[in-house]
Length: 234
Length: 234
Image (cartoon, rainbow over all chains, first blue to last red):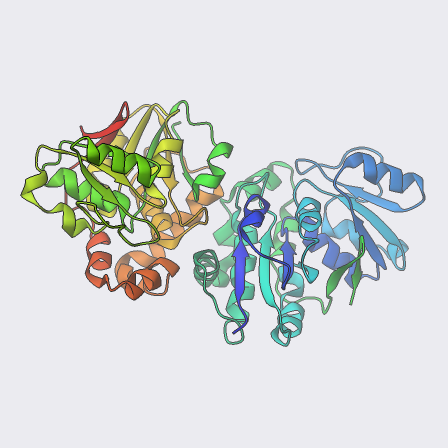
């Protein structure tokens, strides 16, 4: 039977064989929530890059550019790391270069997979419907925070495990733990994550509405996938 | 304020500064449950070693020796990795050399800490009472399974976090996740871990009663601590 597993941080990715798996990368606050929002608003492609410098180079070539480090936007970029900054019709049909503290690193580390997809609560049901019929194993890769596991990415992993539990075997403890955490959280997501380290960081940065937005389920019928070095909507 | 944090696998220990912390090592199924049981039955000291070879060398020097690899006992050892094998009065006052798949490695990786202690549900309350009055931060180090996080060690971490939440700050998500998992599990520990990967492995090995035993809370007033290269009861 096909398996679904969860990797709680990119630091542990080496423990997983991914060359026969679809990897779903998640960075709820806020990289993958931003990407899904961008595609929902018509962005044509997103180029995830590891460094600020690469992002600047692509901006100088004429792409829109979005950057985030430690929850903040360095100067001179077109978008910040708020999903609301992606809700702008000037980006429709365009390409955006993106670098974030954790999210883009998780994507670049996953290139050996059959397919790399982008997950968020915003496109959870679209992902579920698509993955249900795939013949590959699934690994949910949590971007975490600077190499450590975090609550919100683990909750998303648990949500996806929960929705796919009839089609995929849950054989590893990380997947079970994520599923059980989500079961305890799903009726009050905002309350459950209120004390998480990242939400405290975001609150310090004054970004309350991003948090509520990123926890909303099933807003968009969007399936971002990595093609070459670009993310596009399937 | 003093902090309590959780490291879900020794592979992530490098992310934690432990030179001002007490590290509590946990390997519920079954290394640390065995050690606590041994001390409760009068064992004088336990020498954790990384390899089977070192364990054999100590046996040849006249120590009792216990070994486990992949849940099974190699031939020629005095004890296996069942806590019941430690309930033998011939070991009272003696020293036992122990090597296990995950537990002893976690102990040897923690030597930079102020103090390395051994945790299990069996001595949870004894640990709680002792740690409550300490001035150091606490890190619960889950031995996991071959580098991956596991359910039972995470549950123990959550139990200790829960009992110490008034005296220690919980600032990292791993500690929060462990605490919340434990909150959902504590009224039916056996049911909660029934599908975990390790319990399935142990069931295949026919070791049902070890599982129930290791999940019992607060049986022994025992505080094993690393002194030099030996564990002794404080």
